Length: 282
Ligand code: AMP
Image (tube, rainbow, N blue to C red):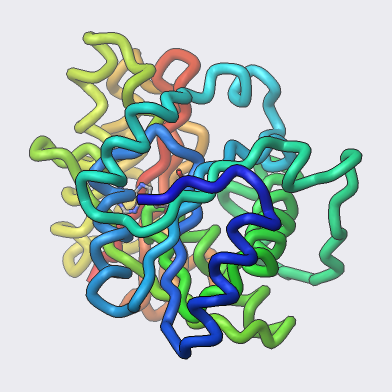
């Protein structure tokens, strides 16, 4: 695997592949890689000639400076993991490469509800920061396909909307959530959990799966009450939100609405670690 740190070096290499008509798959990440990330790499490898991963902890998408400081970083370990799965190229730039002189291209898109609910409500500016960096990375890599996990479902919808509205020539491929054997959604943040927190963390997905099991029997408000009660019964959890939304629009679903596109989304703090998860109800 070749590693690039500068925009020019990776751009020049990829131009040669584009000229040969080779198809490029791209997986943007913030590092601290796990099987969830690797599943995106592996999917790309089955669909493209060349697979490019990036590792860049994007400062402008962190609304909480503490979260940015604490974000786990281990480039040497990540490189080994990518090498082991046979990723072709890694782009690992520093902040100055991506935002030279602190300059960033503003993206004047109205994401509507997608940038008002769930994560957006609690992380103001987060999705704008995500959209700016993904657009910048797309400009550098010019991928034919880009792979995103449903773990960050709202982010996936934001990127799909950006690609649609700006008519970017890239196909967005949505990939399923990879979970630990005990059900916990894999996340770089999981490694920051204490032993005690890690032991109870799977209860988040257990509650989501319980809600899915009860979805055909209970109303939306009853489901939400059940899930919230279960989560809040654990004193280690601080529930930021637990919502049932339409997975196409992220509109909140209420009792008389069609639940067939229902998705439950949750954000829960364990200590100072904020975990998110989601599950389709049907
Ligand atoms: P991150 O490094 O957290 O920015 O994630 C990079 C990409 O990996 C995003 O598209 C995430 O949605 C995806 N991802 C993270 N965790 C998982 C997971 N457990 N399963 C599938 N995809 C994931």
